[in-house]
Amino acid sequence: MFKYFLYKIGQFLASRFPLKVSYRIGVFLSDMQYVFSFRDRRSVKNNLKKIAHLNGKIDESTRQVFRNFGIYLTEFLRMDKLVTDDFIRDRVKLQNVEAVHEALKHGKGGIILSAHIGNWEMGGAVIARLGFPFMAVALPHKDRPVNDLFNYQREVHGVIVVPANIAVRRCIEQLRSNKLVALVGDRDFGQHGEVLDFLGGKAVIPKGPAIFSAKTGAPAIPSFFIRNPDNTFTFHFSDPIYPPSNMMNQEDILNLMKKHVAAIEDIIHRYPTQWLMFREFDVK
Image (cartoon, rainbow, N blue to C red; front, side):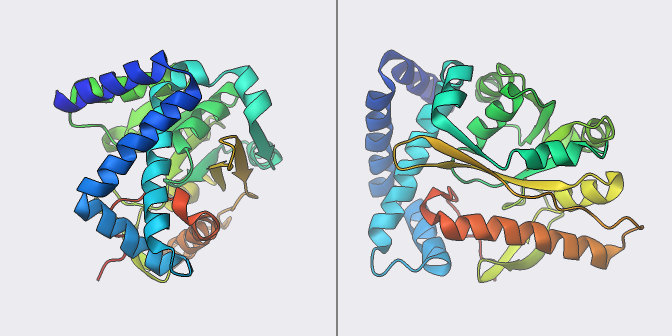
């Protein structure tokens, strides 16, 4: 319940001030987290050392990751009112959104393959408001009130939210109905991932996107909602990654996962301080 009240306080503060003031509040709180959370600070710093050439600016870049998280959370807590048609028109540049239309032409749905970078939650809301039938798989929060609060911010824009523990059948149904399913591919929340080369190390990568693609023929569309310096956004859509047309074996699944990972690696290398990963990705 403590986290629920913390989020509600954050939502109250975010809604009571202009957006720019709310950003400053989010940055201030993130600076406090940076100072007092040694474990998170160490994890972010170690991640950045592996993935980015920062020319001695590792501390500054680590702090920026925390600040980007504070800004992301500020936006998420007021997303119900923030994301409008005017917001999309004025503050979001759609880059290669034709890739989504192209994927859906084949009648097998599409997998929006994303990562914990930029503001992925807002990206889901934007896709739904653009009129695409959209379902997101989310890890349920252990505190029910917090979980309800988070799901409200997603569902108010038309996003269908499905808990990860019951998502398999729903995802297959959604794809076979030629609709979109969103999955993050940079972190495995279960016990069934695969250890792959990732960002110069080894990481446990979720199999879900590749498995669903293999079972349904739905292509993965790497999609990343990236923040610009002026807090506008560019929504990057890459060309669809289609699975082989024949029956796939384990080696085929791994090869498909590697293609997915390559797209995620590319965006993280381009925007390392927007990758909001607070645990070390490299497994020994």
